[in-house]
Image (cartoon, rainbow, N blue to C red; front, top):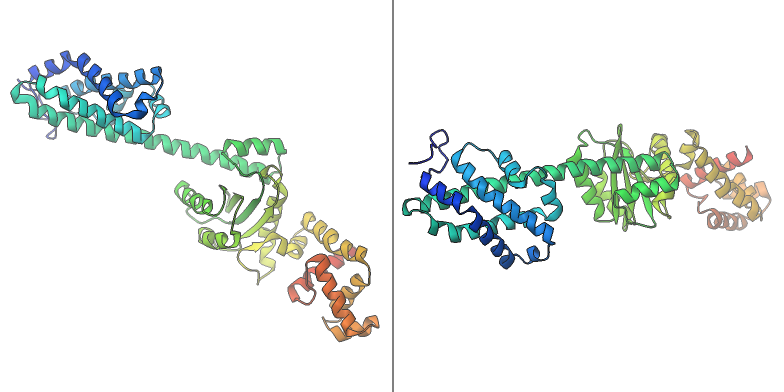
Length: 391
């Protein structure tokens, strides 16, 4: 007498006698599987007693599941997994990886294949082997699906944690809260943070963000990706070869400018750099010839025009006051140089000095401030700083 399998052509039909033999030998088969696992899998021997007992229970459920599967060939993968792993499949995932779970299935099948045919009636031996192989295939696919779903859920949770970290940095929350959120996403860098802001592409889904994160990890120790509205934000830790790395990830951004700002300290204190990057992204259209990407520090005049008090502070304290304190006519020389149309001769006549003196003073201005008055863009930055200083 055979089990009715006419409703599923792919099913395996074995006799009722074979099913009874399998059912009565489930205990000895479970014991045999346990010994086989101990012999074949070195990592299995390193598990705790409780963990090994849990896996042996899974093996016992698997053998019983084979009986049920043969009785009802219409069983599907998900019920199989529920029957096999019990009410808490996450216990298995906490114990072993997907690779080891598949090794476990393979080893269990080996043990069953070695023992089961000798117990079966002659007419059912080949059919039972075929049944074991099909059943193990169904279980393997189902377990892989469970792990995949868990990975998706874990990825979604990680994305939420990253979004909270990005929001905390942008909102300048207390350093302790930012450090806590950074630890939650596994941030390891202790110094050196780069904040990058640009337009988000149309398809900024989880797959895109995961791919972009992998690209960033190639040139930085840490990478957090977030999307806020139509903006794509990156937080990079301990980046090396930043310019080359930025060039590689530029295609990931949408149209428009990409602005970055660097911070030398830990991420807990990177809010100022984040504010600069966001301010620069807003102000970037005012500089039509800006490179892509562009540093927020190169957009100081545009940021001031957009109402950024931080940019105003940098220009006044980092240029105007430095020149004023340096003395030796540096401030007056810059003012005369920009007001006379960037002419060395006109500046010399204005100040009643030799042209070489003007050249020397302008060189000193570059040394003091880092901005070269003889370069048009730098001269514009200096001119803006002088105007702010006078205000």
